Image 1 (tube, rainbow, N blue to C red):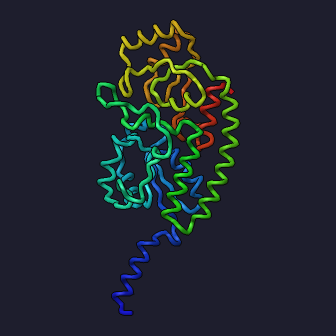
Image 2 (cartoon, one colour):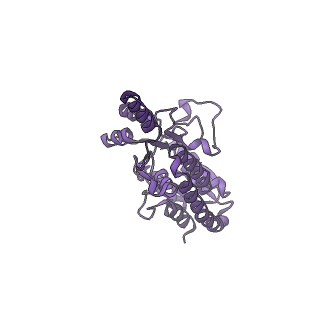
Image 3 (spheres, rainbow, N blue to C red):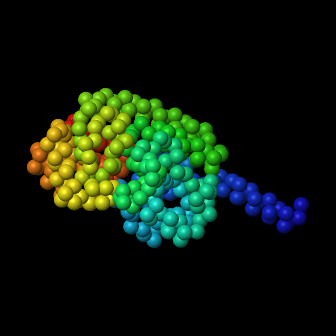
Length: 299
């Protein structure tokens, strides 16, 4: 075999098996995805999240370090449903990493692994910052974590064939632990079935529908559009004819209107985390949902 042919064979081998002896470099758009990937990937992956948990997930201020992370990535895992549409595409263009571009093997869109709610019949800016693929906050239903974990395990196995058994074991271990917590969380939230709430933004729709909690309305006029005086008046008229248990407020949107309504109508205002790191207590995937449920049930 001549030297030129040997070099070509070795180069092809390196392209086909780039991960032998090295950790898979995984970049995620949000912390919850990083936490889930670490559960499934274990010590075979090096995971970095781009966004901070306390940030507005719709509008992320890009940093040069984001480009560097994307440039080194073997796998990019996104929330999808166009939650990243306002900030991720320019970063991908600047990173120029063909492994994680749209359509590449190294891009995983988690929104394709769950049933989306509130998919609009038509899309118009008159309806606010609407998502054409449906409400993108599906991950705040804890029951959706298992199909997401399965999708991540499948993708890691595809890219790192030598780690298949490790990923399967990690997934099985996570499934056992998560199912145990689901039983507990389901039991603790059962008493809220039928309760009426108001949200600032529709972050928690999947959680509310999972547990039979009724949504009276949102403080936002439309998704991404701050409330007007008229909208607040109309919402207060609804409150006068209903028994509202809570107002649910995220940590990144302004809370003046929520506090005003809560005080005026004697409704409990609850600030809920939307991601790992959104509040101090939510420092991991399990504690994120534990804190959401603790705040809802006053445990």
